[in-house]
Amino acid sequence: MDVEAPERPTIDSGRRGSAPRSRHTSLFVGIAIAVFALLFGSIATASAKDDHHHPSPPNPSATPVHGDAIPNVTLVENQIKAYYSDTLVGTDHVPSATGNYAKEMAKIEKAADAYLASSKARHPRGVKGKVKPAVLFDVDDTTLNTYNYEIFSGFSYNPVTNAEYVNDARFPAVPGMPSLVNWAAKKGYTVFFLTGRPEAQRAGTVTNLVKVGYQVPTDANHLYLKQATPPSYLHCAAVTTCTTIEYKSGTRAHIESLGYDIVGNFGDQFSDLSGGYGDRTFKLPNPMYYLP
Image (cartoon, rainbow, N blue to C red):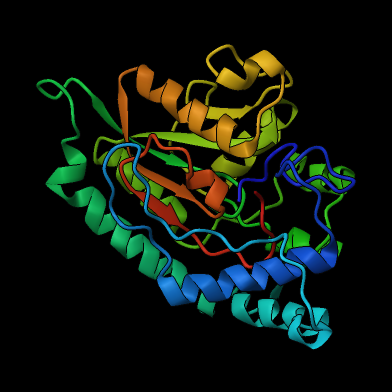
């Protein structure tokens, strides 16, 4: 999920999406995505450059006809807590290392390991190997897990309290992801992070990534945050605002223009993976919220 800014506004304008979400809508769409992911798999199929074949997201604008067809919010919340296997550590609720969420992540990471170890990924397109292989990761709910904040906030989003969690570097790692990221770096992949968090949250983001075990560069050349004014390399800069897909795909295009080939693009939102510039996409589970 990259907590992206403004990637999830209601009263929000600092974290994730560009469309407002209510508590009920967020949870309804979240469980729909969870079921959808279980049916079709968590990982998108390998694809040609700029040709992504990950499953399409559900339609959040569909209006239910019958109220009883809508999942009960309380029951959905309980299902989410059971999926993450809610565990109390100090004052924070965090996912269990042995719950279904951690198990699903382990399967995705195993598939990613196998792909990144393959010659196809290690030797990307380019003239005589001049293109450098890279992997790109979203932050929120891709490398850092935000379940503790969702429980604290009652699955709502408030930019003030969320910024406190971010700046206090309070999020644990997504299970297994530090090992995958560090392993990829040791195998010669350049690691990039791309988040919708605002530039003002850079220090907290860097501190958090390092704190939970990511042993890769997190400087401005490797960690991209959302700028108040879109940079000139984004086509949407002309209108001073970008959708999540425009921002993320445009930034990936910029990274590739620097001589890299993004052989693996990892994200918990469909909007993290759309728009091209990634040889293969890996969709991580997130039943808590949906960001277009």
